[in-house]
Image 1 (cartoon, rainbow, N blue to C red):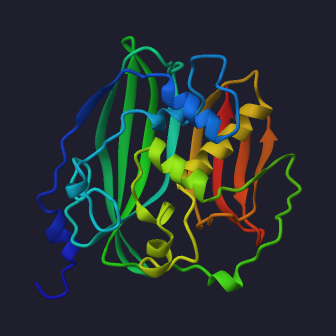
Image 2: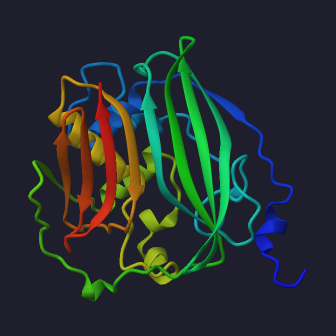
Length: 286
């Protein structure tokens, strides 16, 4: 029918089934990520918030990857031609401590999908829920929001010569400088099985996807925000965490991780050199 949105046809028969996976929860990845952050490994086997992203990784054959490094097929990947993907945010709730050294099970399913119209065209927002169980108990529920488009998208970011380079400032009570260079991005990509080339292949990031530099992973920014909350509230475990990725951060950009505590909660942000928030999060403590 004339005027029909092609997304309707592409998604008509897309009904992804829930999937489950197992992980032995070896402590090795925790030691590796601690080294990336120049920290000693945690004294407790309980994972810090979001560090479960080191586990239940998917390593498809190289032949099953697209030219951007993303997998071409997967149980939660929509059948959209020339598909591009953005991780835009998510929510985490802790019920019990997830520990290393004890096998865990993850159940994953698509719980929502919404077609949206934006300035850059039609987009599909998919929410995937991961429930991780250990010892017969639900340890955490992690919902991730992923945005998909069809065809190449021109990034709406400034050229490299126009980017502010000065250190950001803030009046927030919690502040921690943060910057990620290419070695950090490469190591984080390896630890999280993220083969998207914008994070480690500078000619691809600048020449094909037209970014002004390598892009810092959204999950790395989320971990940095969560890490600030944990460091400032050591006696109170994180119960919930909601996070949103607003604008890209590029390799070498000086940023500031900030927090504004209020009672049993705090508002967190990644502030760029231009003073704008690049990512935000809300956290509650038990």
